Image (cartoon, rainbow, N blue to C red; front, side, top):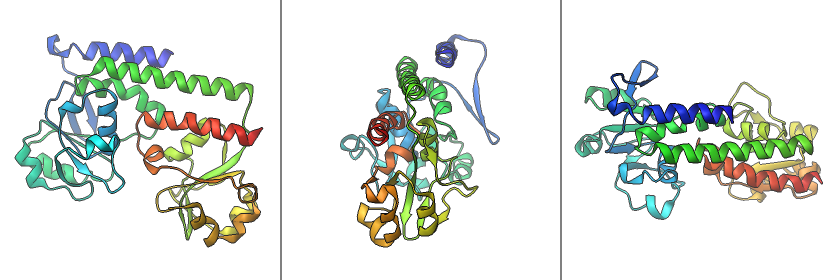
Length: 291
């Protein structure tokens, strides 16, 4: 709760910056963005779009970048104006819409230089940590004019983490597994990735230990590791993709007991509070395996 109180105080202070004699700014690799309320936002970050809907700031969005996998809540975001794909946004469209802020993700940071040349403020929405994401959420709430809502979401998700950790302390899962990126070849997410952090929070051993973000694994290695479960995402469309491409996996506990599942990639790869909700779902699912 200490961290929650810190961000609550920070957000409440920042929400009154319009009346203060000082200004607070976010520094990102030489880019400085003033923390104030913005009203014409274009988001090229699916995660930022999802957060804006979670804190009821969607009216600030004037356009987004499109994603092949869709952006939650898709029934609403599909109606928004767009400036092209996330990877290849149209600078002409962005400039014509006259945004006061453009939000980028870690995959389209090269677009920042073009924005700078047109004097358009931008913010990179990315994080290396789930908890850091929750801690920074109230500041993002200030930017969207929804500080109180962001504080509430942050506090709610911290409580979920606290509850899960308390239950794990009393009854550890003691399971080993991995999130897979592709089935042929087998690629998985390492410990530093968001899926890796999910396993860490759940107290599960990630069978993938590598400096590479998505290392290639041999079926023999997976058999040797003998995972209790496997979750397929991204390029994997069904469970059969995994087992048909790698019959040896059927000899692991995950294969023998049919503990191989698909997970929605957007729920584990976008740095939003929705990851915490999905983490709670996974905890309940994995608890059954640990019994």
